[in-house]
Image 1 (cartoon, helix red, strand yellow):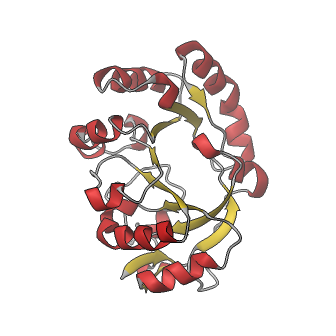
Image 2 (cartoon, rainbow, N blue to C red):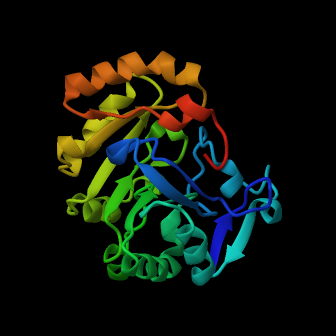
Length: 235
């Protein structure tokens, strides 16, 4: 069984939208949001998937079989799926089965992960793109919890893995540079993105994040979903 995020309506958080971030920005995409995470980012905008101190777990999660999730995704007119969270790789045994089902149906699958867990061979076999977002000091997670060398090294070897870093201040790029250098990550696979859950927050950071992207030879990503719909669940 997969532990899936539940929308306020009671329905699972499985929906059709546009990819709002990263390498496939703007593409029509089905989304599956899973519950549970092994980190606790201070600025996380999906705390309802893991923070059971302030959110009711029963009200915000539900269990679904791989077959049920496959059927729910199949109703959408898109053969691109983004699996997000939470941290999807906490449930990778079940996800590998889901990925195998959807691959047979012709789906292209992206997984968004914080880069602390190494994917299994079965999981890697079904994923077309990895959106890896290692957390920086600005997330308030301890270093040993948010930087997992073995996992980052595994993703670095995958041509289909892109590394997205969330910036809160201009000084955050120094930490990005240290990680890029240490793990020998290609610059064309590094994406800088401003932190923000409102259009005004993103706008205030967009100029200097874009300037840093140019200066350091990295890619830039907005948060298109915030600009279009605000911080709304299921969009």
